[in-house]
Image (tube, rainbow, N blue to C red):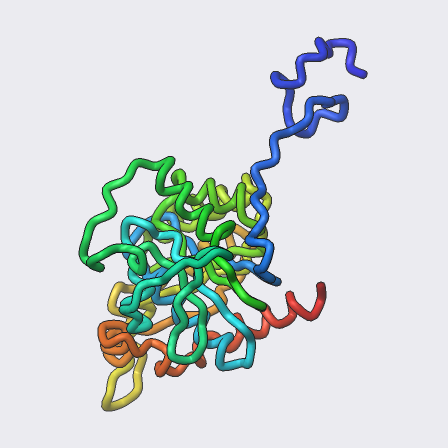
Length: 280
């Protein structure tokens, strides 16, 4: 024991070898009837970069690979997952718990928009209530035999992100970004939070990466030279995919047909996710 130790564990660092104070465990157990193998959070340091798009396409990719997939929409104040999948019916509950909605291909989905009377009704809630709702989506929803659950995170690194990483058993994070120079700041925020919460980062996905010329096939960088590779290298992580600006993808989101979009962009990520499952 250090000669300077005053036995006040609340004042010492977490890595103190003499620490005896029991740390608070915020981990919440999923519903007793749920069976969830891997949980992947899709996040970014800011909004507007396409987290919901990446979540939807990644879930669709893993479903096409033959796995049981679910999406927990943690973006309570800006839920867009039901729209992308064309789900309009409301979720319901029974004596067992809440039953998630199911997409056309069988992806289980839970979102606050599936509880509201009108999908355009705003969710004007304070942080604790929002965080509590996300936690209930984990504890009170009867998820079936799920191989991969994807969590569509809200923008930034606030209350909900903290709730997810403290309460849910997250196995990895996919960080979504855009090509602009401010990407380094965006990525840094997400990476630092992941490190604080001891959750591994699987890598980066760059959205709006380029547009492909319909005549010659040349890739045109609309936002200038990408800085994603530099940011990834700075933090020792991989670039997992680059998604172009694509009219077909945009139309599919608007019409609720995201599951029909080709998902070859996510071939490498799916391989990494399958390796996670096989190596456990």
